[in-house]
Image (cartoon, rainbow, N blue to C red; front, side, top):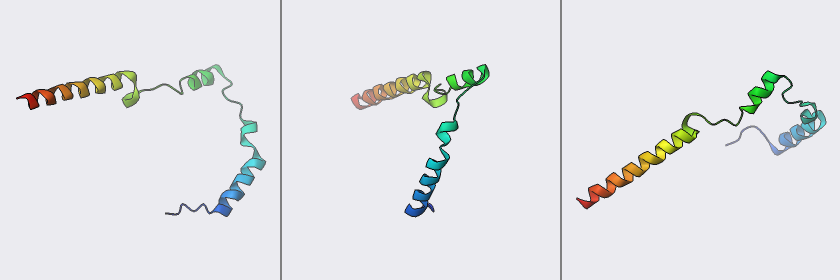
Amino acid sequence: MSNGWTPERRAKQAELIRQWQPWAKSTGARTAEGKAASARNSTKHGLYSKAAKAERAELRALLRHMARRLRED
């Protein structure tokens, strides 16, 4: 399935980006608020938090235990 990026178009875009050098203009967070926000970028929450992972592991262990008990009967 084509996404519209031919090898020629990809090469042209890569050359344009090398000319623009957007990485040279990047400054990162400057204000205290911005630095505080960027410090939270790696925070895990929701389904990937430690608590949620531990809860799923506990549930899987309980299900395995129940399955073993059912097989014993």
